[in-house]
Image: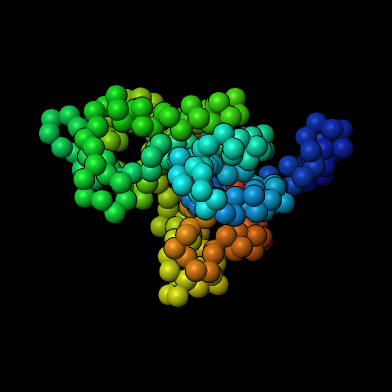
Length: 252
């Protein structure tokens, strides 16, 4: 009876039938998040998301790309405009993609480039600036800023970094253990098939998933597994939503 009533609503044009059926059959919701990276498979990943009608949350930083520019350069505006127009959500992944390495002194946070021992000691306003610049770049390209979300590079935070980010309006988003898709692990020890099988087996309702827009160090890129991964998760009855919507539902 419920399905018949849903179909009747759809036939009268009130709600698309595909949306009705997706709601009726959904056995759990997953949250796919994608961090910036080399940007090599950026277009292909967008194509996969479009085919599956899946909305993801992109955490963006101004990172070097494989083509020699930066991921938030104006040359990438058409790509980010496509993502924004596609209904995806955004969070900041910092501006420089450095790493928070500890709280220092009375009021600063140690912020260090990857592979380096020395960096900068940021005050609260400087942490806010580091988090906000990516949103400003996105808005200049698309007219839309990031949502009030952030993810520290490597997922590494400090108590003070979290507190300062919260003061300027940003909620930190980590990922579930099962949601770590492993696209940055060595392919010699973690094959694509093994990573795919693990995700399909272990992901549960409410899990946040994490992958990247390209990883230089992995010899056998994982991103082609996104298509069979989404197919398999949908077959298990999972639906997908953005982190922004997840937080809205949690706040109710």
